[in-house]
Image (cartoon, rainbow, N blue to C red; front, side, top):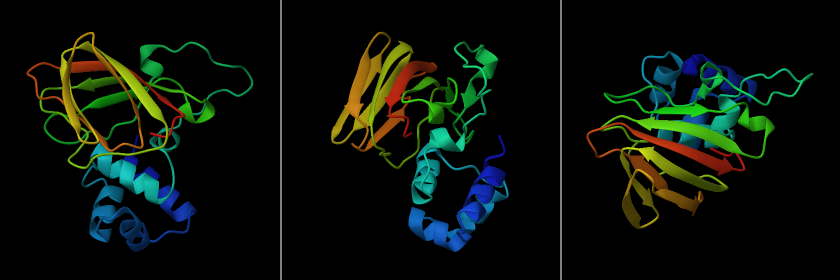
Length: 184
């Protein structure tokens, strides 16, 4: 997906200038311009801040159209939607199952290469999220608690708590997670 073009289209549809969006998100309008020109990619946390300023969830931003005449129940791996901007030396992957904006649950297949994280800023959004580490290990910060989870371990927390995910290990970490409602 062309994140820059999609952001610009939504910003213009909402009648926002780059400066106004930047002020709402706590970023510079130069940063907004660079993102819209695809000269830089925001971290997951920065994209979340931008979309919160619109307001729009990441699920809505990356929504895929599904055939509304017939319900879709099954998805191939190729039909998942990548909802993480690919930035940095170790880009993380957040692959969403289906169109979360049409459901009350958001499911993600998350991959964090060694050194990957959601960004230096802690994220917040309405809802609850849970996940199980199915490979590797991940450091998760929730509010004032930090924990390294290994394969087979999991988490469950109120997403309004500031949180961050960071792979401090040497191998890729994979998590299967859910968020309800799909506000991420």
